[in-house]
Amino acid sequence: MNKRSTKTVSASPRVRTSSPEPSRTSAPEAVFLVGFMGAGKSSVGAALGRRLNWIFEDLDDRIERRERRTVAQIFRESGEPAFRRAESSALHDVLEGIHNQARVVALGGGAFVQAANAELLRSSGVPIIFLDAPVEELWERCCKQASEAAAERPLLRSLDQFRELHEKRRPCYSEASLTIQTGGRSVDEIADEIAAKLGLKMLDQSSKEGDVE
Ligand code: S3P
Image (cartoon, rainbow, N blue to C red; front, side, top):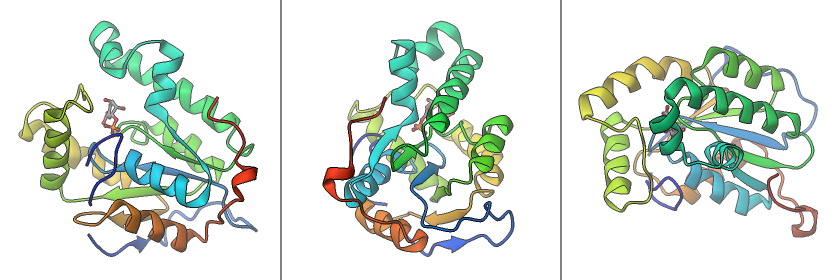
């Protein structure tokens, strides 16, 4: 699955009953997508945004605009801790405007696993959707993207390291409000399922103002 395009991704969603979100009286007007590299966060997010006429934004894009460097450059020139600081600042920005316009936000694979970010996200009351898939499939999607030169991922090294990081992070992702299995399913199918599960409301085209800040 390409980081910035459409693909395929199987299976039955499951809604967590533990860690409930803060109570809400109306349908949500924002959604965060989390999961490991190759989970399809950007492609599913873009499809969901199109389906609902909501703004779609990728947190990595916001980081790149703020830093005037690509994610890969930030890792290379300043190291991962600097990237994580930039990521947290960008997330604060997103959260400040989260109730202004309906939007779907795809987070980079490491964002939700930082405890402070997770706390901030949970306290926003916005649903957090974990896009899950077997690690082998995630690896294959990332390798395919890399060979198509669509996305440079600083943390895409060997399969062993990929597996190890995935195993370490998966319990954090599982703290999301909703988990959807994506293996072998189409992006549109997954987007439809998220919209149905959360009761997300489509906006009139005219209500979708501007673009991401
Ligand atoms: C990262 C995932 C990347 C990007 C950065 C770090 C991670 O985003 O934020 O390279 O720590 O897993 P994707 O998950 O969209 O590839």
